[in-house]
Length: 190
Image 1 (cartoon, rainbow, N blue to C red):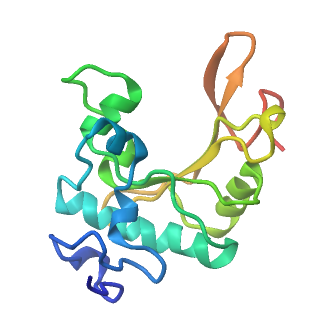
Image 2 (cartoon, rainbow, N blue to C red; image 1 turned 60 degrees about the horizontal axis):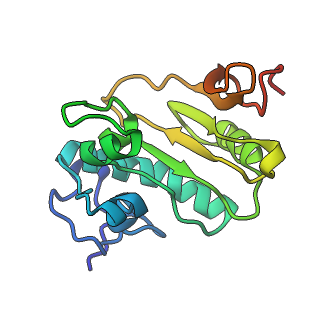
Protein backbone atom coordinates (compact mmCIF):
# COMPACT_ATOMS: atom_id res chain seq x y z
CA UNK A 1 0.00 0.00 0.00
CA UNK A 2 1.62 3.21 -1.22
CA UNK A 3 0.58 6.80 -0.70
CA UNK A 4 0.42 8.17 -4.24
CA UNK A 5 -1.47 11.33 -3.37
CA UNK A 6 1.49 13.52 -4.32
CA UNK A 7 2.11 11.77 -7.67
CA UNK A 8 1.03 14.05 -10.52
CA UNK A 9 -2.04 12.61 -12.25
CA UNK A 10 -0.32 12.68 -15.65
CA UNK A 11 2.73 10.84 -14.28
CA UNK A 12 0.78 8.45 -12.08
CA UNK A 13 2.51 5.02 -11.93
CA UNK A 14 1.34 2.59 -14.60
CA UNK A 15 0.95 -0.37 -12.22
CA UNK A 16 -0.35 0.82 -8.83
CA UNK A 17 -1.76 -1.57 -6.26
CA UNK A 18 -5.48 -1.69 -5.45
CA UNK A 19 -4.91 -0.38 -1.91
CA UNK A 20 -2.70 2.52 -3.03
CA UNK A 21 -3.95 5.93 -1.92
CA UNK A 22 -4.99 8.03 -4.94
CA UNK A 23 -6.31 11.07 -3.06
CA UNK A 24 -6.79 11.97 0.60
CA UNK A 25 -9.91 9.77 0.96
CA UNK A 26 -9.86 7.35 -1.99
CA UNK A 27 -7.90 4.23 -2.82
CA UNK A 28 -7.36 2.89 -6.31
CA UNK A 29 -9.74 -0.07 -5.93
CA UNK A 30 -12.65 2.37 -5.42
CA UNK A 31 -12.17 3.56 -9.01
CA UNK A 32 -12.75 0.06 -10.46
CA UNK A 33 -15.12 -1.44 -7.90
CA UNK A 34 -18.32 -2.88 -9.37
CA UNK A 35 -20.86 -5.19 -7.77
CA UNK A 36 -22.01 -6.30 -11.23
CA UNK A 37 -18.44 -7.13 -12.29
CA UNK A 38 -17.91 -9.12 -9.08
CA UNK A 39 -21.20 -10.97 -9.45
CA UNK A 40 -20.57 -11.83 -13.12
CA UNK A 41 -16.82 -12.35 -12.58
CA UNK A 42 -15.88 -9.73 -15.16
CA UNK A 43 -12.38 -8.29 -14.97
CA UNK A 44 -12.66 -4.55 -14.44
CA UNK A 45 -9.06 -3.43 -14.17
CA UNK A 46 -7.74 -0.47 -16.13
CA UNK A 47 -6.90 -1.51 -19.69
CA UNK A 48 -4.66 1.49 -20.37
CA UNK A 49 -2.48 3.94 -18.50
CA UNK A 50 -4.48 6.74 -20.17
CA UNK A 51 -7.75 5.51 -18.59
CA UNK A 52 -6.03 5.03 -15.22
CA UNK A 53 -4.66 8.56 -15.25
CA UNK A 54 -7.98 10.03 -16.40
CA UNK A 55 -9.68 8.27 -13.46
CA UNK A 56 -7.07 9.63 -11.03
CA UNK A 57 -7.67 13.14 -12.41
CA UNK A 58 -11.45 12.64 -12.03
CA UNK A 59 -10.98 11.34 -8.49
CA UNK A 60 -8.92 14.32 -7.40
CA UNK A 61 -11.12 16.93 -9.08
CA UNK A 62 -14.63 15.49 -8.58
CA UNK A 63 -14.76 12.64 -6.04
CA UNK A 64 -12.42 14.22 -3.48
CA UNK A 65 -14.08 17.69 -3.50
CA UNK A 66 -17.48 15.99 -3.10
CA UNK A 67 -16.17 14.06 -0.09
CA UNK A 68 -14.65 17.14 1.50
CA UNK A 69 -17.77 19.27 1.10
CA UNK A 70 -20.64 16.79 1.41
CA UNK A 71 -19.37 13.95 3.58
CA UNK A 72 -18.47 10.31 3.34
CA UNK A 73 -19.72 8.20 0.42
CA UNK A 74 -18.50 5.57 -2.03
CA UNK A 75 -18.90 6.15 -5.76
CA UNK A 76 -21.38 3.78 -7.44
CA UNK A 77 -19.27 3.48 -10.55
CA UNK A 78 -16.16 5.08 -12.00
CA UNK A 79 -14.16 3.06 -14.54
CA UNK A 80 -15.96 0.30 -16.45
CA UNK A 81 -14.18 -2.08 -18.80
CA UNK A 82 -15.69 -2.77 -22.22
CA UNK A 83 -16.77 -6.22 -21.01
CA UNK A 84 -18.56 -4.68 -18.03
CA UNK A 85 -20.17 -2.05 -20.27
CA UNK A 86 -21.48 -4.82 -22.56
CA UNK A 87 -22.90 -6.77 -19.61
CA UNK A 88 -24.48 -3.67 -18.06
CA UNK A 89 -26.07 -2.53 -21.31
CA UNK A 90 -26.87 -6.04 -22.56
CA UNK A 91 -24.87 -5.65 -25.78
CA UNK A 92 -23.25 -8.31 -28.01
CA UNK A 93 -19.58 -9.30 -27.79
CA UNK A 94 -18.28 -6.99 -30.56
CA UNK A 95 -20.05 -3.86 -29.35
CA UNK A 96 -17.79 -1.01 -28.16
CA UNK A 97 -19.07 1.49 -25.60
CA UNK A 98 -18.47 5.20 -26.08
CA UNK A 99 -19.31 5.91 -22.43
CA UNK A 100 -16.87 8.11 -20.56
CA UNK A 101 -16.87 5.43 -17.85
CA UNK A 102 -14.87 3.25 -20.27
CA UNK A 103 -12.17 5.93 -20.53
CA UNK A 104 -11.98 6.70 -16.79
CA UNK A 105 -13.60 10.11 -17.27
CA UNK A 106 -16.94 9.56 -15.49
CA UNK A 107 -18.40 8.59 -12.14
CA UNK A 108 -21.87 7.92 -10.77
CA UNK A 109 -22.48 9.15 -7.24
CA UNK A 110 -25.08 9.38 -4.50
CA UNK A 111 -24.49 11.16 -1.20
CA UNK A 112 -26.29 9.62 1.81
CA UNK A 113 -28.95 12.00 3.13
CA UNK A 114 -28.78 14.34 0.12
CA UNK A 115 -31.50 14.65 -2.52
CA UNK A 116 -30.29 13.60 -5.96
CA UNK A 117 -31.39 16.79 -7.71
CA UNK A 118 -29.77 18.87 -4.95
CA UNK A 119 -26.50 16.95 -5.44
CA UNK A 120 -26.59 17.55 -9.21
CA UNK A 121 -27.20 21.26 -8.67
CA UNK A 122 -24.44 21.52 -6.06
CA UNK A 123 -21.99 19.78 -8.39
CA UNK A 124 -22.91 22.06 -11.30
CA UNK A 125 -22.22 25.15 -9.17
CA UNK A 126 -19.05 23.94 -7.45
CA UNK A 127 -17.14 21.56 -9.71
CA UNK A 128 -15.43 21.68 -13.06
CA UNK A 129 -17.20 19.14 -15.32
CA UNK A 130 -17.83 17.93 -18.84
CA UNK A 131 -21.34 16.60 -18.17
CA UNK A 132 -23.61 16.33 -15.19
CA UNK A 133 -26.59 14.06 -15.73
CA UNK A 134 -29.29 13.58 -13.11
CA UNK A 135 -30.11 9.94 -13.93
CA UNK A 136 -33.28 8.01 -13.13
CA UNK A 137 -34.42 10.54 -10.54
CA UNK A 138 -38.11 10.13 -9.75
CA UNK A 139 -39.53 12.22 -6.89
CA UNK A 140 -42.36 9.68 -6.51
CA UNK A 141 -39.68 7.16 -5.48
CA UNK A 142 -38.12 9.57 -2.98
CA UNK A 143 -35.75 12.52 -3.08
CA UNK A 144 -32.72 10.21 -3.09
CA UNK A 145 -33.84 8.06 -6.05
CA UNK A 146 -31.48 7.78 -9.00
CA UNK A 147 -27.91 9.04 -9.05
CA UNK A 148 -25.73 11.78 -10.52
CA UNK A 149 -23.36 11.08 -13.39
CA UNK A 150 -20.42 13.50 -13.48
CA UNK A 151 -17.78 13.43 -16.19
CA UNK A 152 -14.58 15.43 -16.50
CA UNK A 153 -12.05 15.37 -19.30
CA UNK A 154 -8.43 15.54 -18.24
CA UNK A 155 -6.28 18.37 -19.61
CA UNK A 156 -5.33 17.61 -23.22
CA UNK A 157 -8.35 15.29 -23.75
CA UNK A 158 -10.60 17.94 -25.28
CA UNK A 159 -12.80 20.76 -24.06
CA UNK A 160 -15.22 20.16 -21.20
CA UNK A 161 -18.72 20.91 -22.53
CA UNK A 162 -20.32 22.05 -19.26
CA UNK A 163 -23.46 20.15 -20.27
CA UNK A 164 -26.38 19.69 -17.84
CA UNK A 165 -28.84 16.88 -18.63
CA UNK A 166 -31.45 14.69 -16.98
CA UNK A 167 -32.30 11.11 -17.89
CA UNK A 168 -35.94 10.79 -16.89
CA UNK A 169 -38.89 8.51 -17.48
CA UNK A 170 -41.46 9.73 -19.99
CA UNK A 171 -44.86 8.19 -19.18
CA UNK A 172 -46.20 8.93 -22.68
CA UNK A 173 -43.53 6.94 -24.54
CA UNK A 174 -42.83 4.55 -21.62
CA UNK A 175 -39.08 5.17 -22.11
CA UNK A 176 -36.27 7.02 -20.44
CA UNK A 177 -35.20 10.16 -22.31
CA UNK A 178 -32.28 12.59 -22.11
CA UNK A 179 -33.48 16.17 -21.70
CA UNK A 180 -31.61 19.44 -21.23
CA UNK A 181 -31.23 20.82 -17.74
CA UNK A 182 -31.41 19.31 -14.26
CA UNK A 183 -35.02 18.30 -13.67
CA UNK A 184 -37.38 15.65 -12.34
CA UNK A 185 -39.94 15.69 -15.15
CA UNK A 186 -40.47 16.76 -18.74
CA UNK A 187 -41.79 20.13 -17.53
CA UNK A 188 -39.53 23.20 -17.45
CA UNK A 189 -36.18 22.86 -15.66
CA UNK A 190 -36.11 24.56 -12.25
